Image: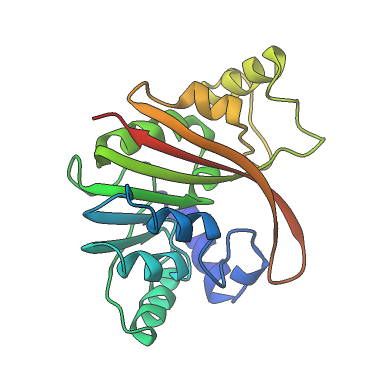
Length: 223
C-alpha cells in the first residue's frame, strides 16, 4: 500500500470531508437495491470496494452470507463498522488498497464499486480488472459506477480519444487530473470472461447539492 495515498485518504475522512465527494452515500443506490431483488441475484459473499461510510455494505449484509467492506482509509472502515452496528447487521472490514486484494480466488458472488476504480493509479487499471476476474466466482457480478467525462476530456468513444487514454494507461503520456473512464475504455479493459449485462448513465445529486454525471455498468463472469 502506498503510504502517501493512504495518509491523504485518512486526512479526508478524519477531517469529515467525505460528504463533499461524489461517492459518499446516504442511502444505497437504486441499482444495487434492484439487483438484490432479482431472482438471479448473486449469492454467497459480497465485497464493497471502497466502502466509505458503509451504506452499501450494510444493505449487502442483509442479503449475503458474508459482506466485506474494503477501504484504504482506516477512518472510513471505523465509520462503516459503527453504521452496521447501529443497523443491527454484521460485516467484515479490511484496510487495503486496490487492485492488490487479500482474498482467495472466486471468493465473491458480487463486487460493488462506486468510486474505487477511479481513485487508483491509471497504470493499475488493467490489474484492477484482473483482480475482479480472479475474485469473482463463476456467475458472479461486478456492479460498477464511474464518473462521466466532462468537456475538458477527449471524447473517449472516438478512436483518437481511446488511443490517448490507453497510451496514458500504459505510460506513453503523463496522466494528470481526475481519472475519468467511459464505457468504451471500460470495455477495452474488461477481460473476455466478463460479459456486459447493462450500461447506463444518470445524474446524482450529492449531499452538498452538487450534481455529478455517472456511468453505471453491470457485468457477469461467465460460468
